[in-house]
Amino acid sequence: MSDTLTEVQAVEETVVEETPAKAAPEAEAPKPVEAPKPAEAPAPPKAEKPKAGRPKSTAKKTRTVELTLTVTGTAEGEWQADLVHGTQRVVSGLVIPAISVAKAAKELHEDIAEGIESVLEAARDQHRTRMEELEAELAKVKAQLAELSE
Image (cartoon, rainbow, N blue to C red; front, side, top):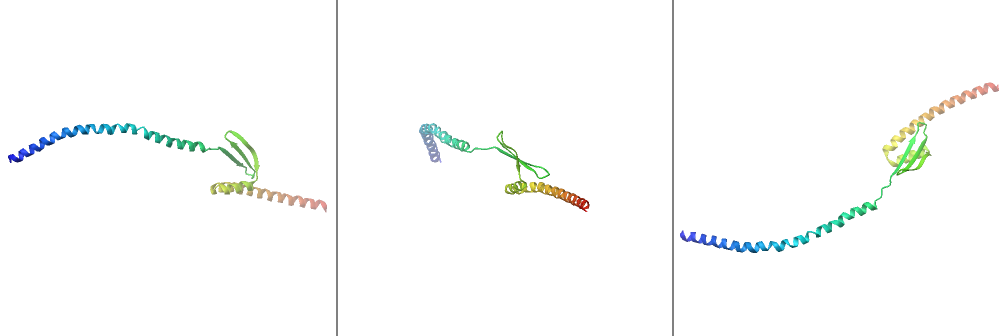
């Protein structure tokens, strides 16, 4: 057993002696490795700068135009349009036929078409009622004229 202890002690002494010797080269080895790292660090920001510039250039190419088209209608079925470009009024009070409004609404979206169609249907009903009243009045005037002619 004394031989075993002596061998263990000898191994420990060898490891202890080798460790400081190895530690010194290891301490020197990271220094050259660390020196190139700072040189590499500025390179990635240079690569990031063109990437940041690309979205800006596409944003400059994209231009938003603000146009506001307002279509107003009355219960009688009369329609008008106003067009504003930014803050400048381009068209004001332009009379539009009801059929054109109906066609445009159908082209835009089903929900828009339904809303406008309900307004147009109300105007049609009102005009039918007015037409029936006028036809009744016309029949009455014709009857009075016929009485005067006899």
